[in-house]
Image (cartoon, rainbow, N blue to C red; front, top):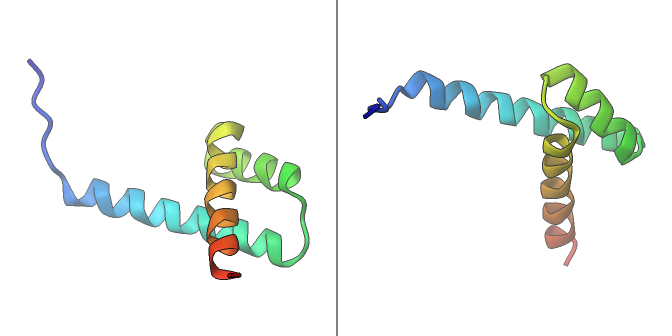
Length: 69
């Protein structure tokens, strides 16, 4: 059986990485870059799949729709 240990550094690093991805997507959106291009750029820059990058984009768009009400 494998035991997983809690390492706060891993949590901090993952949180910072996600924050950086969200910030990059918001910056692309501010200058009018379309989602397909954002997905490509984010997946290449952060080494994630395009599908995973799209999940970040979808999250931001849901937040934007929620705040527009």
